[in-house]
Image (cartoon, rainbow, N blue to C red):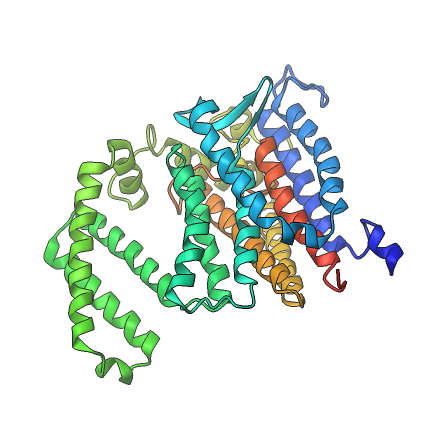
Length: 426
């Protein structure tokens, strides 16, 4: 038993490791396809994006060894310290950060740039697991819910101020974790209703009566389903009035924010997404080209390095946020489905292993990992196929970038280490 404890590879879940290797390897192949030119044929050319990504992948292995070197208690004991240091790294950006594309999200170390927000997700998951795993912690108490919200949304606010609203959205994924640990479903229902109201208000161009009626009907139906039909009839009418008031205020607030606070390019993105206007040359260009690229692959794809749209560089940032469009063109529907299946297998495996944890800390962290990965996959692929607006969220293990790759590696392999030690009494 002692020898197994000292072996960093003992009890490692090799299924997760295998899925990780396949995703990273296939991701690099698509980065190579998206960034290769006729003049760059050397795979080991470190002046190219695929060459740099290969360096990032190689450096991932010592990072994994370092993560596996420490036992599970180390991550539990120092979770709060990791979290505080990650917040300091975000605050430091406002002084020492480098501005790229209008966002101060990077530290520049010569040829290497690091984006702290990619690592903060893992440390926030550790902090949430540390908080919720306390035996005295009751998530049903309002004061305890507020504590959890502060831990989750403090980094989200700092990231939004960079500004990088897309990366900040990821922290909504922690509501799945909180719900698993006993938080009422009302928060998720309430959030979903606010999103629906927001969309209705934009779609109908703010017609107060129509928006109000549609919103009221929607709230009534969802609440009736949630509470169980008959109980809705005995609903407290003071609460009904409160719902009407809050709904009305939110509609007015949405209209004001949309027309007075949002900039024109923000409004354009929503209107293109909702089909209120057609724009394939400016705001909607990226999504339109991405959809064309994916659909051109048909069932089986055009073949590796044979994607003419990819070679023509018609999709901006195709090697990063739009890397999935390369998969669609060169590998087709079957290849795209294969990638999605790989992600689903990884998520199911993480959830399954999380449920086998006797240690509450490991289970909660595992659900944090699964929720973050799920949110990234859904939002990124939804963005690439035109179902969601462009928000700049990378596809885990696929998109180009050392910070993204290393951040997801830290997130996953901390869980793999916790899982390997779940049967030990440290």
